[in-house]
Amino acid sequence: MSATPTRRMIGVMLLVPLIAALALSAFAWPAARSAPHDLPVGVAGPASATAPLQQGLERQPDVFEVHRYDDEAAARAAIQERDVYGAVVATPEGPHLLTASAAGPVVAQLLREAVTAQAPAGAQVPVTDVVATPAGDPRGTAFGASMLPLTLGGVATGALVSLLALRGVRALGAVFGAAALAGLTATALAHSWLDVLAGDWWLEAGAFGLAVLAIGATVAGLASLIGQAGIGLGAFLMVLIGNPFAGVSGAPELLPEPFGVIGQLLPPGASGSMLRSVAFFDGNAAGTPVLTLAIWAVLGLAAVLVGTRHTTTPPQTPPSPETPARTREAAPAA
Image 1 (cartoon, rainbow, N blue to C red):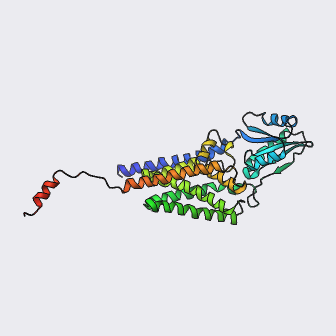
Image 2 (cartoon, helix red, strand yellow):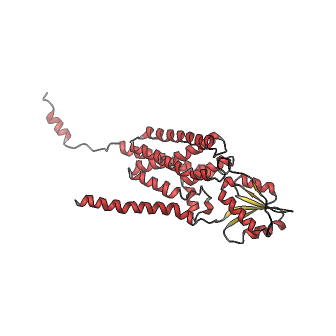
Image 3 (cartoon, rainbow, N blue to C red):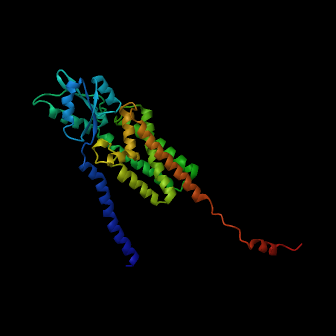
């Protein structure tokens, strides 16, 4: 056996466990270290009545970020605008908890446990789900599982554009067309068939399409600039970093710091937040994720065009000084 095949065999034996370890660490570590960090919640009612509630929520430092509201109506509005995940309303009968399971069932359950723990023994705390998950996905598991296929679809879009050697306008058309069709297909499945989403159908299709566009353009742009290694780099960035830190299954505030913030700056995390806002909260708080995805998409498409120009422009070579003399020698006599 020659040395080269032997080195390749050893390389495969070492590379596969390394990839498996990276994937396991990327997906399992955030789940194993999941804990709330500065979860925005509210308390509503007179200051004298809400003070004990606020003190109870702040008893564990850095777990909750408490916002005060004058009454229940203001707290409900804050939940619907995605300013807070829930709120505790002080009433004459005792605390009344408002949650939004559509913002994250894990967070809603965490709030129930925290408020119930403060209540007197045997007391029942009424709970109102202000923005509930749809009937087709009561626990939010299908929504949480939607981000990985969406990410893989974007990576596949960019990879195919590169592997099929599409350049210039054709590359842009392929990315835009694939993103648009992926958005329509995903919405037909998630909204019309599975009943996982509950917002405007066309806005959801646009959200899915923008997510695929941002991811696909980034992968295609990296491949256009640095070759096929860009496909691997893009897949690593989106699948092994962006997807585990997207916070779609729970909330970004449940991830280890500062990875929750980092995840929202990458397309998978921004896509999850945008889709949740569009599907359940009438588009409230979707502005920042949309801007994040638009920046990634524009930069990726610009990289596709720049890389195309570099690969299609032939090198300019100066004419040889001997060319005129040869031309004169080769010219027929008058």
